[in-house]
Every structure is written in structure tokens, then in C-alpha cells.
Image (cartoon, rainbow, N blue to C red):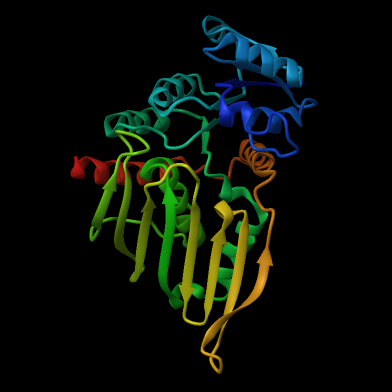
Length: 313
């Protein structure tokens, strides 16, 4: 028996980023690979767009006033952050088996507090779409860090990003928490630049803070004409770089004789099918009662970041 799935929002991350290419970057294309498992429905405030996506993938369309008439096993929320609370509340209360929600979860701390209470009484699992958590090369890197005890060798982290502290910055911070399994806090945060080019509610910050005794430098680029997302991890004798939006990982080893880092491994083309990895992870999440979602960890990070923004306004 097929499951019923719903996509709310057919914009960029919902369906358009990979509409005319070979990549798998959106909810719609990823779930189109599983038609033998799911009857998929799409809805959008722009009904013409919803029909366009439905025709592309042979999905069903629903108007907003129709979605409450159906039972769904999967729901993807690919709408603006300001709408997340209402949709998450609704489907948590309906105990939808699995909810995939774009990040950040919310833009208000009060909404997070309410969601925490609702989630406690719900059987739903929620995956907040920090997609790098599901990509095999990042999962393998996490294991290598643990197996080689690199945590104790960590010296510095440099993050370069733009387009919002919450929007893009949270991807970097969540990835750090995923790799090292230690929560970030901002008790010793030193902010030295604030820019609102991207959003009047989500500033792009430049700052520094300590993480596991090491210095983290968060460098926010104010130019929004291009996208930048890079992270450098400096260890005692190694350097790991995420470049090209994290689509490539470069691993260096330190040559003491030459007094420099030398390239050891270069992994490429990591993100081209990222939403396929997300959907595969979500199927496992749905089928394994012992596998935890990432909602509470994402919620705590979201709350800490909102408090940072609140304190600078």
C-alpha cells in the first residue's frame, strides 16, 4: 500500500532549483524517484506553479483549502520561515509520521517554545533539512574524526558565508555540531560586523567565539551577488576544507620538513544529489523507531541564534 505525501511550497527548494537540470536538489524531484512508494500531492499559493510541478512529475495537485481533507504520512514544508510554525503545529497535532521542514525552524523564540510542547505530545518525527548530515562523504568524515580522535587536536575553525546568520550561517554551525557531536554556545561571542543586506530580520554577522576550547571565526560576506559557503578546520597536523558551497572536501596533512600543509585527498561532486540522500534518510527515520530525528538539536541551535540576533537589535 502506498503512502500519501504532501509538498507545501513549489518554489526554489520545493521544486525549481533542479527543474531543468540533472541534479536532485529539491523535494519534488527527490520524491519523484519513489513513485512506487508514495502518492505525492503538491500545493502552493501560486496554483499555476503547483500545476506546472505536478505536470512535470505526474503528481496530484491540491488547493490550500483541500489539504485538511486528506491524511498524509509524509509532509514536506518548503515555505517561508514565517509560515513554519503554523504548518509544523498542524501536522504535529495530526501525528503525521514524518515531517521534513526547511531551516531555520522559526524566526520567533516564542514559536519554538510552543513547538517544543506540541512535539512532546506528538508521535511525529521531524527532519530539519540540514542536508549535509545525510551525505555519505560527510558521514564518513564524522566517523574518521571520531576514530582518529581528531577532536582533541582541533585548533581553529574558519567559516565564510553570506545571506543571513539564520539562513546560511546555521548550515555551517549545524554541520560543526554534527561532525563533533558537541553543542555550540555563544557565551563568549564577540561580534565585530553586522550587515542587513540580505534581510532586515536575519543579519549577516562577523564574529568570533570559542568551541571546544578552539577559536571559531565567523566571517560574513556582505556582497549578495554571489554565494559563499566555506569552512576550514585546522587540527594539530591536518587541515580539512569544505569549498564550493561544501560540494568539495579537501584534506591536507602537515609536512613538518616543508613547514606547510600538503593536499592528501580531494573529494568532489558531493551535493548534486543531496535531496535524494535526504529522502533516503527520512525513509530510514520513518521505518526505524530507534533512530532519532534532529528536531531538538536544530531547535536549540535555532533558539541560541535567535537570542544572538535579539541581543544586537
